[in-house]
Image 1: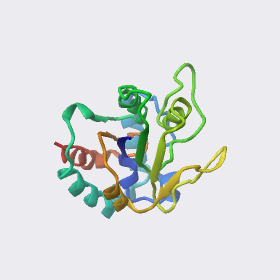
Image 2: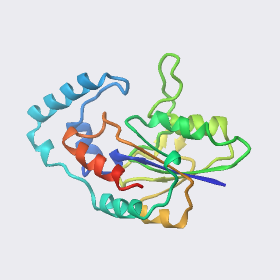
Image 3: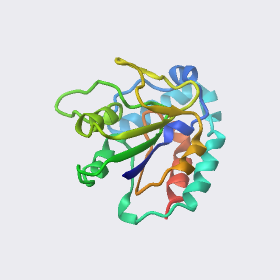
Image 4: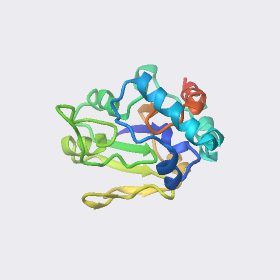
Length: 198
């Protein structure tokens, strides 16, 4: 079995689901970066308290974990958008069974897509399961993460225990920032986390 550790930085933001709905912009996941930056700046003006949002303790646990993580450079990918995990998945022969451990505020098992882009940050996991139905999944979520999709309760293992990653073996590491859901004053924290690897 091939292990993939998928990390979305939005998991570590110290904001509840309610505060995210209040403070974070409602933006398109394919918005140009300069426009997204401008929208975030307007949110800071409207909600100055947004600047006080930091990261949860799990951030420091994972940063330490990644310092000791042994992975081949070619099996590590750092990007903005979660949809690019496809480039890792597609490199793994389909005859091999996958286990994906996804550390994420969102389950990414949604249905939506637009135009011809059937893989996006919110449905990539559903696409993997459609293409590789024998994939095992463990979602490491936050206490107030949404656990439902149109199909009902998220149909795979899920836990709030990030330390459970010690029980798994990983061959690939993927990390994304998700700038739509990550306040820009935390960009440095994302870079620190990613630079903990290798």
